[in-house]
Amino acid sequence: MEDSPVAEAPTPEIDVSRPHTARMYDYYLGGKNHFAADRELADKVLASMPSARTAARENRAFMGRAVRFLAGEAGIRQFLDIGTGLPTAGNVHEVAQAVVPSARVVYADNDPLVLAHARALLTSSPEGRTAYVQADLRDPGSILASPVVRELIDFDEPVALLLVAILHFIPDEARPGMIVATLLDALPAGSYLVASHGTTEHDPVGPGAGQVAYRSSGVTGSARNADVFAGLAFSGLDLVPPGVVLVSEWRPEGPGPRPSPAEVSVYGGVARKP
Ligand SMILES: C[S@@+](CC[C@H](N)C(=O)[O-])C[C@H]1O[C@@H](n2cnc3c(N)ncnc32)[C@H](O)[C@@H]1O
Image 1 (tube, rainbow, N blue to C red):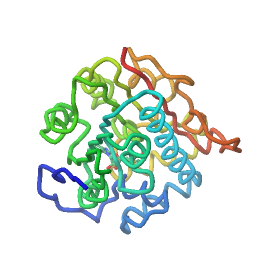
Image 2: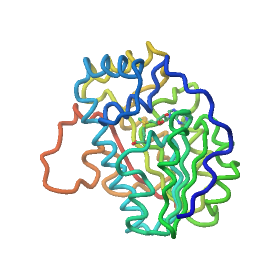
Image 3: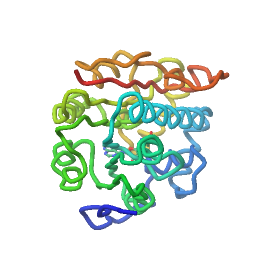
Image 4: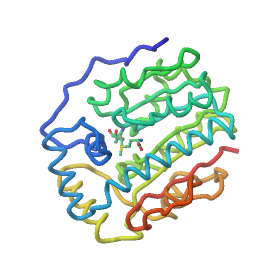
C-alpha cells in the first residue's frame, strides 16, 4: 500500500470550543467525530430543520454517484476533492478506485480535525495514490501550487474537481465565482466539476433558520437558489444531464421513494470543461 505524505504543515491545534462544519456534518451523518460545541449547534439546526440528516445523506449519495459516473463513463483518473469532510463511508478514493484501481485522489480541507484523521483518507489501492493537503478554498492559488497537488495531479490530463457541499460556506464577499474560475482555469479541457449547494428555495423556513443558527456561531456562508448556484459554479461549462437539480434527482439509482424537495434542499450538478 503506497501512501503519500499526509500533509505539508504540522497539525494545527484543534479548537473544540467552537462548532466546525465538518464535525457537524459528521454528526448529521451519524459519525462519531464531533464535540459538544458541534452537537449543540447541530441540534439547534436540527430543531428548525429536522431534515438536515436527510439532506446530508442525499448529498453524500449524490457525490458517490457523481464519482462513479466520472471514473466510469467519463473516464476520469484523477480527482481533487476540496472540502473533503471527515473520513466516513464512501470516501472519494474508495468510490473511484472501486471502478478504476489506479485512480489518484488529492483531498483538501481547512479543518484541522480532518487533517488529524487524514490517514483514513490515505488508504489507497496499491495501483492508485491518495494525498491530503490542509488548505483553504478561499486561497485557490495555494491549492494549485501545493507540491502535494503537483505531485499527484497531472495538469495535462483531465481532472475532476469536487466542490461538494462547500460553496455555501463561501459568502459573496469572498467571490466564490472567482474561486471556482481560478481552479477551473488551471485544468485542461475535458476536466469536470462536481458541485453541490444548500438552498432555501423549497423551504425558506427550515434551512433559513438553519442558516441563521450557523451565522450566529460565526460560520459564514449563504444558501443560494438554483440559478445563482449554476451561475457561480458552472458558467462556461457543459452540464451533464440532468443539469442542476436537487441532489436526490441527479441520476438516482433504484426506484425510490425519494425525499421531498424541501427535505433535500441541496442542489447539485456535474459539468465538463469544453
Ligand atoms: C458539509 S462538509 C462536506 C463534506 C464532503 N464534501 C461531502 O459532501 O460529503 C463541508 C466541508 O468543507 C470544509 N470547508 C468549509 N469551508 C472551507 C474552506 N474555506 N476551505 C476548505 N475547506 C472548507 C469543512 O471543513 C467540511 O469538511
